[in-house]
Length: 201
Image 1 (cartoon, rainbow, N blue to C red):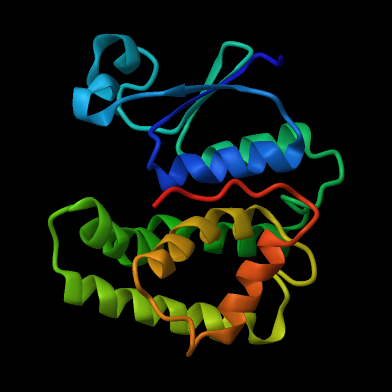
Image 2 (image 1 turned 30 degrees about the vertical axis):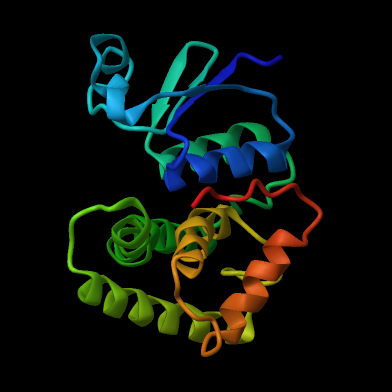
């Protein structure tokens, strides 16, 4: 067992991204599930680890890393010897960063919130989040019309960052009929050589 610990909620899509990438890298880790309804993420013990009271949090050899996108970058930099998952070069890294930003913006306020309202009972405007989700799916489908993955012919942490919440939005009722390139992208990720942990509803 490595010294890696991951604090998570069972239904956290952002935590799923990290579990997914840890599995791809073949890294063993200790999963610590917090109970959000018990406010365990707001306990003094957890706030001492992450003062923002949010998951995921990854601890590796006593170093603490918060924010799913920052954790993806850290894991790729430290453990991906191939350089595939966070490719070198200003142009490629700026492209990766663009998609990491989309995952924290448009995806969080579209597919993530749509799924939250429909399946978890979060408050919000379902019609508005549906429209945001469709707008994002249209953008993503057009982008993937000429690419196997977000940056080209090989997946990167950009694909890991963007996969989970759109997939969960489909489970919540978004129809992929008009988005065939997204459907094919999902299939490539799920049928690839790496183990994919299915995101929870």
